[in-house]
Length: 191
Image (cartoon, rainbow, N blue to C red; front, side, top):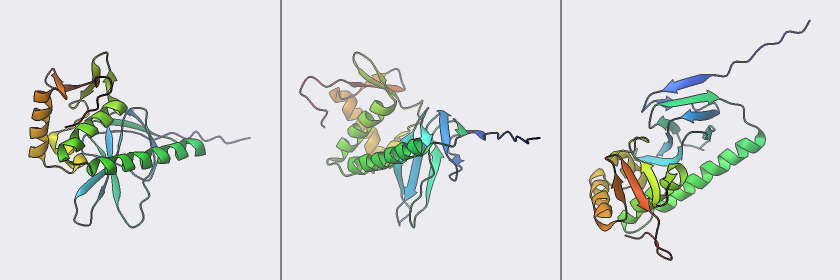
């Protein structure tokens, strides 16, 4: 006689600002998460963003703490990824951290925000004939969180978004969505 134990996968639904348990691998089925670490002074540094369908693996950081913070209401399921899936996930995490570090060094500081919006739009936005539609509300990307992501102040983010709208770099769609227009052939989005 063989005993077969069925292993039930852990499923969680977490509210915004909740911290995802970091010792397991998860598949994100709904919502958005940001991976954070801190500077020696205690400032939050975001090193990645995850959305629906993404695999989330534990962040192993030598000598430092990290967390997976829910931006929105999140649904996740514990998974046991293959070695290939885990390697791809860790590579993606590293690429995101590098991209966010590069964005954080751009000058002038307004360039950080427009590059960040385009990067987030490429990952999570909806492509239309006019450009990329990005819902800051759906992702719960407040001006404070955008400031954390770019190393700007909340006030600077608010002012920069107003300038971007006035210059046509972004277009407000409804009250909560942004349209990032396609650049004209040969033109880049510069501030």
